[in-house]
Length: 286
Image (tube, rainbow, N blue to C red; front, side, top):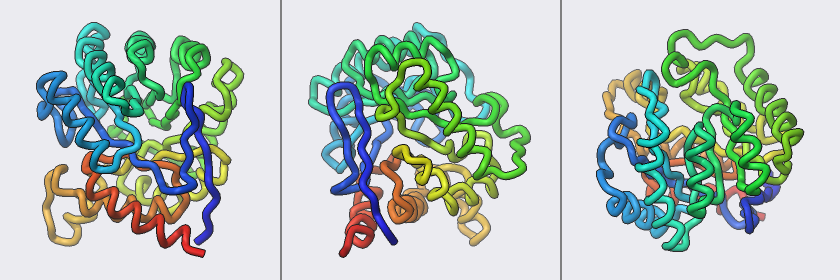
């Protein structure tokens, strides 16, 4: 195993994985997310949860107000704004590094105004207005690959070579948004585990995640509690709900760290923290 530190500029600061792989903790302010929908019914509860994630070891908290699970129902701009802006503001006031998980430029703009430093867009910044917002604000960008959209992405995802196609798409999109004014140092790539991929595609991407890391951008890996983990465990004779897959998630976290990922996005930060810091120590041993 070899390790090369990477940096990522987000508005007024620079993050680095020189000391450890970063952990992004999930704060879903939604009634219908696949593993934790409806658990955080008020801004106060969501803010308290985000602070707890930071205390457990999250370097970034990612706030989302619209589920992007397969076949999720779209949410209006007004509803999404009402869900996320108070939470973003509260977490920023608590001194946390906050990411806004949205595909809507109006929601991203309001969150950035409230202090969010990262825009996490599952569409890969497909909307030119999102590119313009990120360029003007200097926000860090998580640019994800998704085949299709949340309503259709799991209908029949097909690739000739999933690793090459995902890496090629993200490299080209990174060049496209740089042409739109987003600094190269602000871009983080996400292969989109579970977004328009079959069980086999997800395993192949994770097995070859170093392919994406060699593109030269920081890479975020988000396997937390996803269906392919349930399929692995089912094949081993163990049926699980999404919330029962934290140990399986920890295995993917350790492997992502060993491959050189910049950050991992997880629901259970405490479990991921132990897995990541243990893997960090081994990878960084000299």
